[in-house]
Image (cartoon, rainbow, N blue to C red; front, side, top):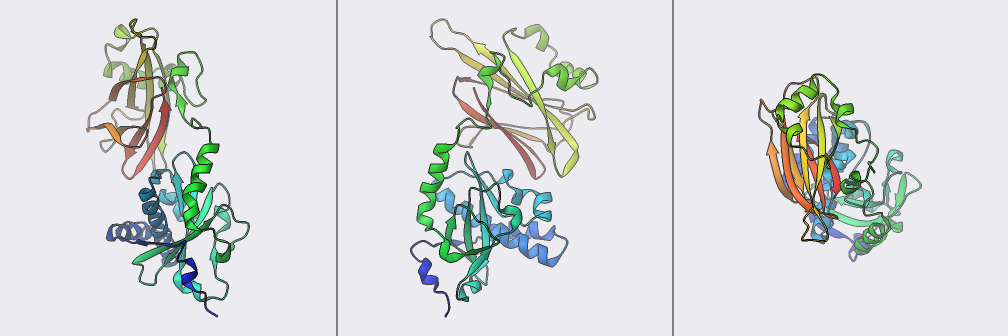
Length: 329
C-alpha cells in the first residue's frame, strides 16, 4: 500500500518555498562540479531555508553563517544540510522527495558524515515542483543511514525539545567573558598585542593608526586579540582586538565598562580589504553599530559602554563570508 501523507497532517507543517530561496539555492548549486552534486546542494538548501523560516516564526534564532551548508568548501565536499541554532547546536534538515512517501515503509536518507555533532534531524518533504516544503517531523538522533519515517516525533514537540537543550547548556559556553580579563582570566586563543602584532610592520600600522593610544591609555585597560581567517579567501586575514576599560563612578556601587573593538590588517597587507564590514550585534542578533572599510583603511574602531552581564557579538563580513565572536562584559 502507499504511505498516507495524511498521517503527518497533525505534525507536518507546510512552508512555501519563495523565489528568493530558489535563487539562493540555484546560486549554491551552480558552484558544484557535477549535476548530481548541484541537485543535492539545491535540495539541501531548500530544506535548510524551510526549517529556518519555520523556526523564525517560533522565535528561535539561527546563525546561517555558522553552518557547513553555508560554507562553500564544506557543502562541496560533504552532503550537509545543517542549521546552527544559536546557543543550542546544529540541527540537520534532510530533504525528501514526497514521491518517496509512496513506499510501503518510507525512509529518509541520512548520510554518515552528518550523524555526529547534531542536536536533531528534521525531515523536510519537497514536492515535485519544488514550490512547497512540508516539515514532516524530527528525531533527536540517528544510528543508520536510513531513517524510517514511522520513527519521527511530531513537529509540535520540536520547540519544547530545543528549549530543553537550551536549559542544559552553559549559557556562556563559547562566549568570551571580558570583565574577567581585568582579573587576569583570559580564555585560550586570545593573545597579547605584543604577541599578536609583533614588531614590524603591523605594530607600526597599529600605532600610526591610533597615534595617541599610548599617551591616553588607561593602565587598567586590558586588550587582547586574535587573527580571523576566511576559508575561501586564504590570503585575506585580519586582526580582531577587544579592549575593555572599567569606568568607575563613585556614586554607584557597580561600575560600567567601555569596550573598544578594533579590526586592523595583518603584516602582509597595508590596508583592510575594501569590502570588509564590522558589526556589533546585541544578544538577539540585531545590529547596533556598523562600519565599512574603505580602500585606504588601516583600522576600524567601534566603541560603546555596557554593564557587567551585558552580552554582544562582533560580526566581521568579507565578500560572502563572515566570522562571529560572542562576548559578555
